[in-house]
Image (cartoon, rainbow, N blue to C red; front, side, top):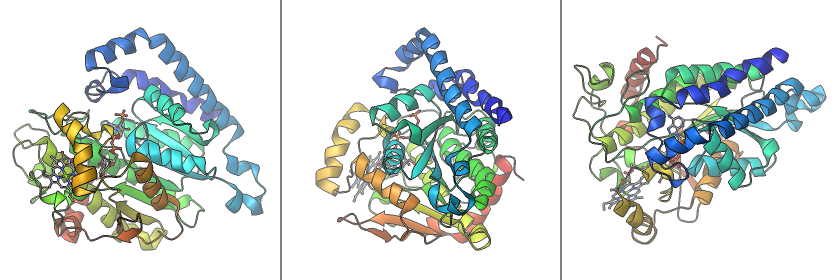
Amino acid sequence: MALQATSLLPAAVRVHKEGKSNACFKDVGFLGLPVSDHVRAECKSSLVFRRRELQVTAIRAETATTGPAIDQAAPEEKKTLRKGSVIITGASSGLGLATAKALAETGKWHVIMACRNFLKAEKAAKSVGIPKENYTIVHLDLASLESVRQFADNFRRSGRPLDVLVCNAAVYLPTAKEPSFTAEGFELSVGTNHLGHFLLSRLLLDDLKQSDNPSKRLIIVGSITGNTNTLAGNVPPKANLGDLRGLSGGLNGINNSVMIDGGDFDGAKAYKDSKVCNMLTMQEFHRRFHEETGICFASLYPGCIATTGLFREHIPLFRLLFPPFQKYITKGYVSEEEAGKRLAQVVSDPSLTKSGVYWSWNKNSASFENQLSKEASDAEKARKLWEVSEKLVGLA
Ligand code: NDP
Ligand code: PMR
């Protein structure tokens, strides 16, 4: 156990190192400060930051020494007594935070908040009142495959079981004129939303397999805007992966397109394409692993949560008008709290155990199995996406 405690240290230390990376500098909106103020504030408060890292590390070290709650129970009680263990990526705001809160409040779940900004996550968890014994923050930057690998290693060494993995984090860059890139040089939206989560899910699949929870799940958040069988999915630019020629070429812009379909850069399309990848990946996981492992694979559209940080890069007028437009015109709006309850249902509701499903909710907030678009349910494309993604993240 002492070994576990020390092995947890690098995760905290990395927060500092990776705060300097390309992707982290894009972290605008932190505490409402513009980039330059944020970076300055971060530098000024580096002492406070380090102290917090040490505090959280100490808490985690303590957890590792005493072991997760599971070890305290008598063997025959283990299955019923221990808390469920769920990793949620991007739990520092919006849907991820609301889901973490909804689950942690039940007292039945321990939430591992996998976040790129440690301090922001800690403040967020405190501000919404998540009971401190029910969450742990662990650093994860999905825009760095090295960080993803380190997260998976650290998680395994912590000795915690893994019952549910929720791939929730995302970036949306609708106003970007030029592409940004992940640490490994992939276009940032697809690199973060799809490739980072693809590697994470693959690396943690064995941990999920080992869970003794009969209802272990892997959930990848999708969206209506990636589905061209809906009105929302037909607002230009429309998602379209084409024949994946850009992805096959590495999405790096070096003698190659940064878009999956090989076209010119368009930030809004890249996001929608990444959501199609999320939904295809969920189904490919289902086809490859559900029967063998019993893991339930699911995706969902939680509703239009028009107030979240997802729209932070959009123009101010959009951010002003989007919530009333969704509330009063499309009526597709849901609050962060309601959306969090929906995702928490997909994590823990005993009635939502069907695998391979894309969940949505009707106006009375009742869940139903929704239909994916032709492209988002194309099994051949899903297989090809899987194989190309495997190569890009270094698994094949
Ligand atoms: P938010 O911006 O509030 O949350 C996104 C989260 O992802 C944040 O915690 C953010 O961290 C995190 N994140 C971004 N980049 C990285 C990275 N490189 N590494 C780790 N974490 C990262 O948006 P939402 O809550 O709206 O989005 C959550 C999910 O819901 C997304 O998958 C989105 O596609 C989906 N969705 C949202 C809808 C909506 O209407 N808002 C509708 C349909 C689906 P940080 O706090 O540090 O920025
Ligand atoms: Mg949309 C029923 C209609 C509906 C729904 C549920 C959404 C959800 N949107 C709908 C309709 C429309 N939108 C229409 C008619 C328009 C044209 C005026 C429109 C426009 C629009 C824009 C510009 N919508 C948007 C944007 C964005 O930038 C958002 C986006 O695409 O983010 C990727 C968005 C969204 N609309 C939604 C949802 C859920 C989003 C954002 C979130 C997402 O998919 O993750």
